[in-house]
Amino acid sequence: MTICSPKKSPMGVSYSLPRSISSILLSIGGLAVFLLFGSCVLVSHPIGSAVQAYFLSVDPFGKPALFRQSNARTDGHGEAVVIQTFAMSNGRNPLLSSVNASNDSPGLNSGANDGNFEDASAPITSINPNNTKAVDGGSCDLYHGKWFYDPAGPLYTNNSCPIITQMQNCQGNGRPDKEYEYYRWKPSQCDLPRFDGRKFLKLMRGKTLAFVGDSVARNQMESLLCILWQVESPKNRGNRRMQRWYFRSTDTYIARIWSSWLVHKTTDAFGFAPEGMDKLHLDLPDETFFDLLPQFDVVVLSSGHWFAKRSVYIHKGEIVGGQLWWPDKSRPMVVDNVKAFGISVETILTAISTHPNYKGLTLVRSYSPDHYEGGAWNTGGSCTGKTRPAEDSEVAENGFTKAMHGRQVAGYEAAVRANNGSSIVLMDVTGAFGYRHDGHPGPYRSLDPNKKTQRGPHGEPPPQDCLHWCMPGPVDTWNELLLETVRREFEGGGGGRTV
Ligand SMILES: *[C@@H]1O[C@H](CO)[C@@H](O)[C@H](O)[C@H]1NC(C)=O
Ligand SMILES: *[C@@H]1O[C@H](CO)[C@@H](O)[C@H](O)[C@H]1NC(C)=O
Ligand SMILES: *[C@@H]1O[C@H](CO)[C@@H](O)[C@H](O)[C@H]1NC(C)=O
Ligand SMILES: *[C@@H]1O[C@H](CO)[C@@H](O)[C@H](O)[C@H]1NC(C)=O
Image: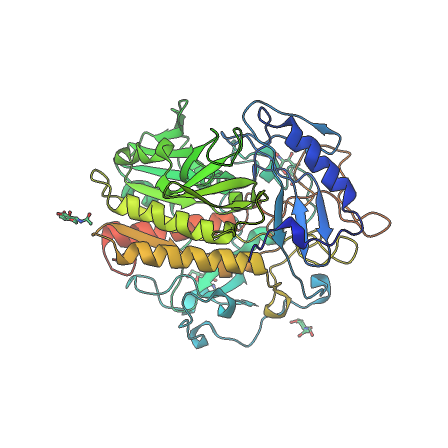
């Protein structure tokens, strides 16, 4: 099934406007430039009751490009994008729900439902972190647990970190609530320690950590830099191929390489696919990062959302499918975007684990859930107004996220089975972060004093980003998970290593 097929959209209300925007953008075409998930949600509109399409943009070096409906700016690096995703909501108003401590005790969760994020139990509770086991054993499952309110607050502020991308600087952009900065993740069986910058740098002495992937990778990298900035200001040693920061005290580099899909991409004509369109070779890794692997000791991979973008899928020299593109209806499409994502994950991880000169630790950060929730923009869609993590009853099941996560885990497992001794760890954040509908910039994605932040008179939500994460915010937890995984690997203790 082609989950993102536009054919599924009822030609209904409000479809014509975004449709015309999309054709304008696409006709800007080959030159232009309008990258995905960079940051900016241009339009958010529902199609029928369960599908939403939105536009996002970013440039490959992570600088957000702001697009407006009538005024798409292009910078020569981006591409036009239409993303469609399923987003279903139970339609509850989170503001009416209590976030009182539940009776659940962290120890009571079995934590045995691995791999099935739907079952992850993660209500918000008040937990006394002092009363729980320390992580030292290193074998505890970090991804089943709960969010709890921690009065200690965030690891940095918008004022103490100088490199927050404006689109993620929610406080700086006027977001009025702050509670979302105070929730921390508590695995059921152990504690996830608060990030210790000195400890991280010591573990990474003489080493390089690279984030590879899309704008969500950039989001995590900047979070890590902000956290580390509190103990040491790094030097910018970036170059054209990668953004790179140097921490002198421990001779540590934090790097980032842009790779939208992680697989090899071409735009030349191929078979019946015309020149100019992105063609993804699902069986070949993206050379832009793959060739650089030997320089790295730890690699964090981030991908997925670009599979909603228009593209052609090629596997073993044949066109096997396409996203928002399939001209020849008489041929069956073998690979839809969800399957393509799974294949790409297996390809990358297999290639990494058999790379002759890379013996580092690889983390696969699982699909980052977005929260364009609600059936329609005038009946409660969007993430506007979410100020606390969701409770179990409020978590909106998102069919697309679930399908993507399922394929990603399967691709990961297949690669690990065939693995030859390198360390590949799945950072399975999808379930836990499904609860963090409060952690996105929403309408607070720019400094513009005139931006819309409230619903309009007919209930239509303001333009918003419900995909990236505010900084400070939940994304900082990814780096606590990263530190814990690196610690387990480098200090021993087991549990971090999958192989
Ligand atoms: C939530 O907690 C407050 C104070 O602890 C209490 O007064 C209130 O009744 C609780 N609400 C619910 C729904 O349990
Ligand atoms: C946890 O321990 C710290 C230090 O021992 C203490 O200051 C804090 O009050 C404790 N927290 C709770 C909730 O008991
Ligand atoms: C940080 O946020 C506050 C509002 O909480 C704002 O006044 C301040 O200008 C922001 N600083 C930066 C550098 O964005
Ligand atoms: C696995 O590693 C061994 C020894 O390092 C090597 O000889 C072998 O070719 C590798 N197998 C694969 C499939 O990479």
